[in-house]
Amino acid sequence: MKNASTAGSSFVKTAGLLCFVGAIMGAIGGIITGFIPPSVSSNWYSYPYTPAGFLVAQFVFILNHLLLLVGMLGLVRSGAAGRGLLGHVGLWISAVGWATLTLCEVRAMTLATSPYPSPETDFLDIWFGVASILIGIGLTLAGVAVARAGEWAGWRRFVVLICGVAVFIIVIPGVFGPFLAGRLVLTVWMLMLAALGWALYADARAPEVGPDPAIAGLR
Image 1 (tube, helix red, strand yellow):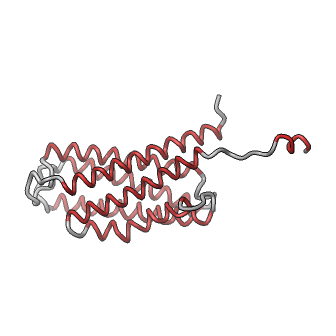
Image 2 (cartoon, rainbow, N blue to C red):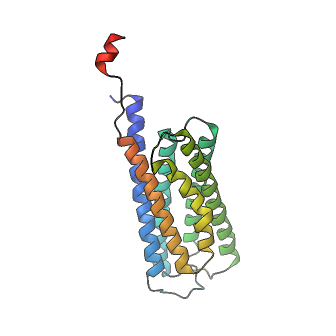
């Protein structure tokens, strides 16, 4: 039977792998959305997809967000942010942001045949913005905690912070620009989140170094 430490490490490893897979899904989705030949005019909310294609794309994005949410839970469990309040608050703010973003995607599915812009899509865009800001704030706070805790070394020490700051530096400005540019910055951000997932996975795989049995026996 697994002890609590082993079970926790197994969860972190699985969460990291799911976060990595979800982020790669998001990156592929961003590339496809950016370069697929439009099937409808840009004043349809489903652009560039047909309404049916839009529903499929939204399902993929919902799965993408849920897998990234699992990654946030794995990051909480990993202890990489230390035991301070800053890291835990940041990670839970981020988790709320991913949950909100998922609900926004569910709502978007009901607007597949709606004109764009419209009062309904404008209201939904506001909530997409709120969710993104929550994710950015949460990851930034957690990233500061991870960097200060020093549990992760090398590039992993700063990957959470980079993912958080990127929301404000490239993601939000990018989605307000041309459609293709918005999809490309989201793809880059997803690749950053894939690196975060891999950092979690690698951390859980690292063997724990215990005391030397010979030395322990002399105590």
